[in-house]
Image 1 (cartoon, rainbow, N blue to C red):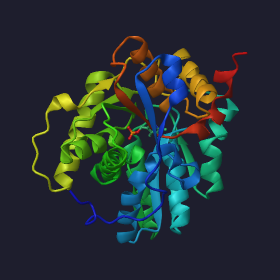
Image 2 (image 1 turned 135 degrees about the vertical axis):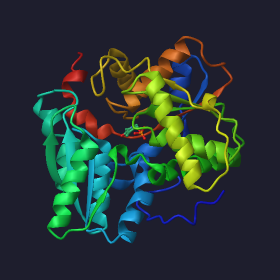
Image 3 (image 1 turned 30 degrees about the vertical axis):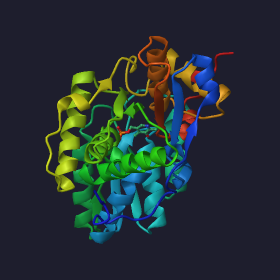
Image 4 (image 1 turned 60 degrees about the vertical axis):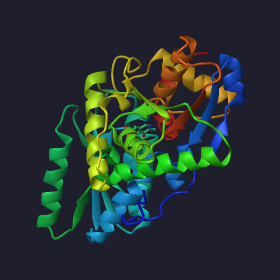
Length: 333
Ligand SMILES: *Cc1c(COP(=O)(O)O)cnc(C)c1O
């Protein structure tokens, strides 16, 4: 399967490295742990949204857009990468931030990703938690159109069939990387949120006929809802690719036991995982996604979910900039 027929703009550094985590493997007593460094995609400190934006921004350019609109939580990494991509392509950027956590910590409200949105020249507007954000974007787009602008609306997380192509490609990239070093990957584990990353990976692994087992660790929705979102988007992505498919619902697995009390709210497992990776591997996770994803992976390892000989790849989806929005969560000593 070749994605070269889909318009794409180069925004990131690919392929991202695939590295062993020898110290973490030793600390946890196996399985063999690897990390796929999508925190190193290169755009404005990197992250998984860059792969999606390569396809989404190509559509925006083709539509002659002069402003992109997107939305996310206050510490959205997607918003920050979109702001950077828009800057690079000479477009304006309007970001609508939803207060999903209720945190009034000034670091959460204005530091980290929020600071970088502004640094990249984006306009930032706030909305209360629970607002219909898709509708808010449509309203903003209508207003801009009436003023003569040409807006392009990117859904939250860049999660639609166009954005998910970035992770179809990532699946192909990882399969090739593993083959070139004779590595048989048993599991691929990552944090899942707006579903585009997992849906793209599901579609890519399916298209490549791969037997890598994919496990999403939920960061927001309950299991049933998360799996349904991923499944639906994976099917729509395969349709968009023009592939005939019969996707078995069983290939979509999300474990949503590590969300804690809600999206963006720290858990003790997340704090432990962020600290563990910082101190064993010199790696920076994030408090909202990859920290909870790694907390899930560590807990499943401790519970014997994997065989000691399994090769388990953790997809690092980025987000360490958000650490600066959460200093209080790490004041433990
Ligand atoms: C957005 C994000 C995710 C989740 O990806 P989705 O495609 O929204 O499921 C995971 N990790 C980080 C750091 C993110 O910013």
